[in-house]
Length: 314
Image (cartoon, rainbow, N blue to C red; front, side, top):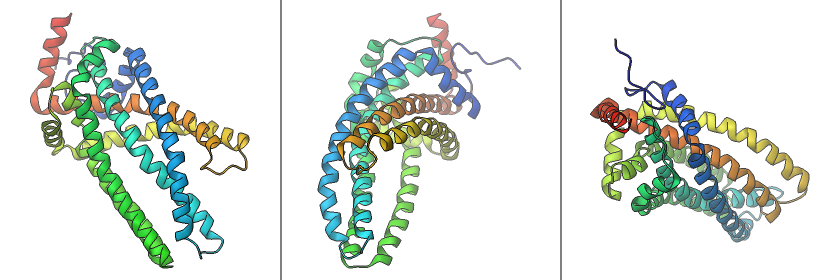
């Protein structure tokens, strides 16, 4: 059997799981300036904005939760502080980093798609390709995150109502069931829409057409996409943990008695977040781009078009 053509980071045929993950690393190495440079700048600005918003929102929520949990004895302060911190982090991180990562994914997908045919895209070329679709990428991220925010707000609202009524059993049940439901919903929606940024940018689609097209591409491929994404997330979590451990140590050393809602710990956390999110976004965007290419090679013969493009470019 004739070997598949490989002008770039992956062979031009349906890919195995190992080839997708290996290709993602190769794509990063093929164009590190664009992959890391663009990501680091955008993530840094985004994390600064998110940290300021989180600090402000935590202050607003802390008072409301403190009143709701009055009467729980020694646990009231712990519940109020923990819930206000985690809720504020979710409500501010989801819109800000979510939008930034959607745009970055579009940017990095262009670089990866060029690496597949053995070419290297400059930052200017990447931005020129993504710029017409930047609003669509932002709109897609906002719509997706709006679902998560509304579900989270519903869960938090029920927790507050039950806590105010001293129904501790219902509080615990709502948290457990709500988190489980939110996790399942998040995984399902993320996988079914994972190819939308690639469709918007690489196929020049409008927002709604891109969502419909991305949804159709994932039909029948859910478990393969989920499996590859899960492995990629595990890799990212391991790397992020390596970054987070020194950050947690630094926070404890510099602010031993500080509350997580104070500005000092937030600054340290933000620095760690910038590093972790930069590494995570780069790798996950490369994986998503290769999953998009793999799906289209399996269903639409994209490998033939890519081979032709590689031959024309050589």
